[in-house]
Image (cartoon, rainbow over all chains, first blue to last red; front, side, top):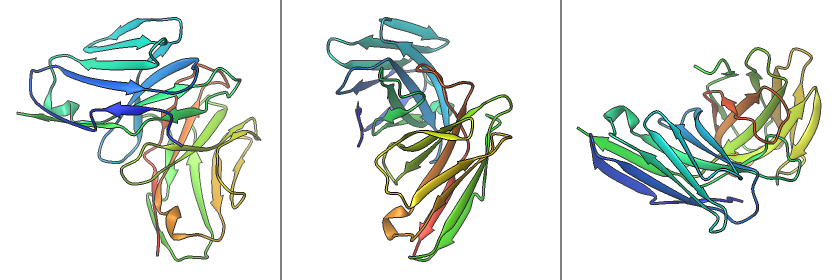
Length: 113
Length: 114
């Protein structure tokens, strides 16, 4: 079953604009990760935020985590056409589950020239 | 490029057949996980192997089985294929068995069951 729900399901913006995607989850987590997937192929890790962190930056990416609301957001600033992809949040559980991740349903981002 | 390779890239089988999918982990990674991704959905965890032993399994029936070899390459076997097994199968390796490890994914095997 899917742990997370991404919102919106699809997002279309113009190049140069910012893109914000939200993720909600249901149970306690150890960490939350964001992955990107191009055209239904392999996923690429973008950023990991631990449950005791509130915000993290990596290049044009900014991730926030609110464990009280069980939600996270991914902000991509100054978007480019090459950012067009599906974005997934994934949660790791604090129950010794090793590297098991539970993925959300994804947000399809389209960046138009 | 993540260094994780999967074969084959595409496969067509008929219902009731058996299939074996293969994965070569990134160098130095001793943990491998397999995920199933149905069209329009996020990946779902099948199972994970650490040092050749299964270490965690998702909600998949026993006809989904796996192996990890001493060189940390891995196989996913599915018996008695059903139509609903049609999906993208993703292999992911990680550096260690930890609670905050990022995964390195292969490009996947697209399985179609007719």
